[in-house]
Image (cartoon, rainbow, N blue to C red; front, side):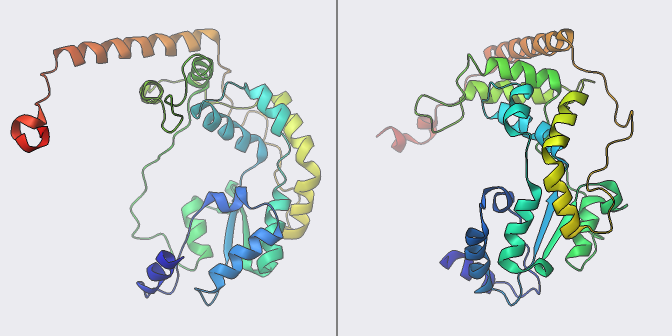
Length: 277
């Protein structure tokens, strides 16, 4: 708390922007949101919230990739079965209940909502500025391709995700992930199939309608179905997984041969004798 107060006092700008996805995902009720809102109110004259919501079927595909990267062995079918219902209305209502609906800007990650400026342009407009002069940010946290995610999911069952103490990511797993991400192949991305999409949309129909009525009354449907063929892509095949696995083995072998031929590292004690004491 002291660190944050000192940080705020050290700046004299009119607007202080805080970005934290955990506020949206981990705040469970109005009581918790009110605690955070009141704390922020001790530091700022006005506190507003901007919440970006993604259609649930796309959010689940992204969540699946993240879970696999963190060691999950569950399939996409498993995730849809356990987590199809994602009540975005509840999450928005939490913050509206704590700060008042006028202090909460709920936005949808939909092209017709964001406009030509995309996410960055939309966010800049919401906070009263423009994105002009900002250098385009490089993409980070890219998603695994569908066959790479499937291969990593199977490997998660045999290679521990963390070290023996459970405090750090297993170095072997970190190296495997870097190899899988480095494969710039024309492979399908993780996406729910039509049956899974139908399951997710049915599970969220009622809550999405409540969100629409509360925050987007002029919108006919919160997340209209994607037009047939939009973003069409082929499904992954066992051959895709085999290609990714083969490339991974080749890259592991290349790195091992490179490590064998690399000159030995200098002993730091040779240049700093005091370290050997």
